[in-house]
Length: 462
Image: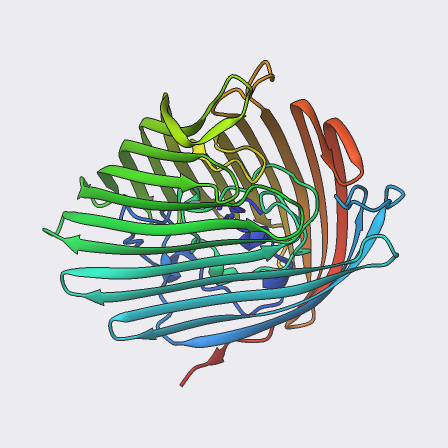
């Protein structure tokens, strides 16, 4: 949940975080639980992913299925039909986690599918599908990596609880950075939407201490049935990495992004230059901070005296400069892991605003309470403010959104577990908005889920 973009982090994806996952409790021994079983993280500081505590030292290929059933009570389900304030959902989920290693190649695939059915006539049915696919090709002087993330969800991804606690232990740390994915940090009326991101990263080693990194990506956010703003973004990033010590790295990077709205006459181009610092202590600490100016240029339709656009003439307006900041830290102490991420940049506005300056922060505390019991606390905030004022509004539209949650999972037998999750969501705005049948300047939602998950021992791939 802390990674949800939308990831998620997007981490991120409405799937709850690694250690709080109900599905993970029923799995075989997690190779990431013991720092001695991790190898050094070699991701480029100027690359497409955040830094991690390390990569699994396991060298065998495997696949692992997952199935489960959950029951959810939702006080404000974002639906248009009258729900009398409370809707209960039954969801069944299944998925697969696959990791294939060969000489010069490292492939990871995670897929989760779920169907939600309301237990009354008002809620209807919803589908959840989430896919993460990574392929890394290696040779002595460099690497080429391919990343694919896609979700098909009935509601906004950031802080969502629609997956009812299902996730994959090996998916954590695989997600792209939020700046390369569609932002979904504003709550909207329930409706299916697809979020997809594809990125290619090329790393060229210059010396044992230095390297060049190039990243190209394209992402889109498309709504099917609630009339929101669709968006697509193409990005290019280039950076230089230099390793100061065995633990510390610095980088310089430049990123260009082109944001477009197919059903709205506006385009946004952004230029960002950042300096980054990273520190890695295998199994204990992963810290990354990148900061620098962002210059944004908007192409807007010119209005005539009657208030209508000319349709053929555009004016170029500059917004900013803003400070773009990306920060993430993961710290592990004994049986507890702390994670915190913060991102500030110009994003697509989550289908509600045609471009917004977004401040997004999320954190989690995941712990082994006992041998068989795991617990997690998650918290997140997103502030979205429009880039310009649309007359006759006195100020740009802005939305503030908070979520928090508690998750508990207990082993039940060798391969299964039972779980209990609670989630709260609050949103307010400087103008009135509607979520389902609820309209006003504020919104509150509570959801609680109980369920059962089953995950057998990893199955070897020959």
